[in-house]
Image (cartoon, rainbow, N blue to C red; front, side, top):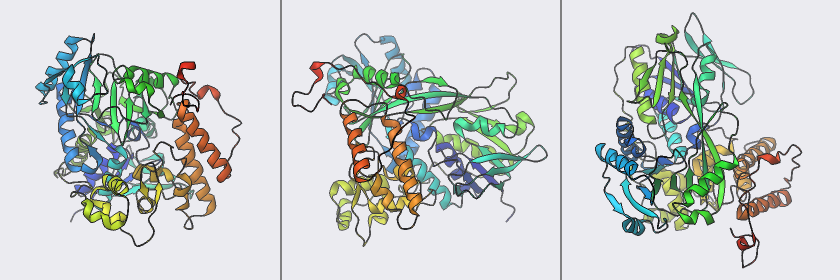
Length: 563
């Protein structure tokens, strides 16, 4: 065999892991580095919608066709990450009838069955929607777990020989004779920096792609758009429901893991590292979508968060960019062609829905740089966990677990369920909200694509800590699984980091029942775990004041306000 080029991919989101997997399957030597955990950027802060392309059908049919095809592909290769909920685009009385018809016709043109449903038919399908729904049409939307999808993609890349190094930030690009020859990284273990040589570097750093390119003196102007979302304790709908109107953002209800995600708002921001969630995101989403599903006005918001979506924003009119997709939904920049600097390609944009297609385009481009002609296999090769159907209930009864626990584990693990859950040791449930057992937590801790002392890595692999209590009742149990392998100081720090990460999304929804839950969590940690802390630099302006209350909102059964 001849020399095998070494490709280094920077970025551990859906696109970066997708590129690493594709290149590894084509026979390249691949290393992926990520500054935090997998999904730390926009991938881990999306709304869970695996969209059919219906939102683009009216304005961009080519992009809609791509989304529809990729939605079907992901359902085939990542079945344990996708739930085929179906979707409805609904129109309320007074909404623009012409806009509704244009969107519906566009969906039919790209291959969707978009038969119009009457208000009565919609009520039969989704009785919790407002009687103001005048009509609707079906779309093949689905939901996706972006954490599970990205972790499975990284595992597949490793199975094909790739190296995945998380918590390994890039501190510099190595440039020699107008060529990028690798990167300098600073591993989390504090051993200092080290150099990783590479024949080619793919910059898939998302919102930080411009910063990375700047390390080589290259200019990649990246625009940043904030998408705000709210997690609500229960879902009023079984399907994804989108209001079919011309307003941009804040019009989608996504049923997700027994709850729902309301999304999304959109505002331009300057800094991807600054938390930009604001009170008006919560109020705007809850109030706006309560017009579609009135129950949302009485539901309990348990978390609010935002993601920062990057897009290429060229400032130079003569910048040469190879644009992927029919519409520029992502940009692929060859820095040899544009900047006379060999060894670096930057990819910006794309979505979780289209990430595999974007990765294929990047891998094709890298192959062309080395004169290699190898077919892409990622559209047909299942991800780990989806190679076959999950074991039946009868087979899994042998584990001695409650049926709800077995079902939750099977949904998360897919065909890996028996491998992970089967044990001769005690296997108690550590996270009651999400029915996560000890063996699943230990499987996450042993994952070679994770940092063992980052309990947020356990969360994205198992959903532990993502329930109604937001880790209040289980975080100490998760931390205890690090003992005695890890020193007490590291375990204590891991527990602090997990609690802080869970708190950051709760502080914008502290009213009613969620405020009571936050106080219960604090009392439990302060009294039982001796973890009371003084927050001397507390910024009260960062907290959401919540909705206005009056006496009519008091719970007649006692106990304060209605939840």
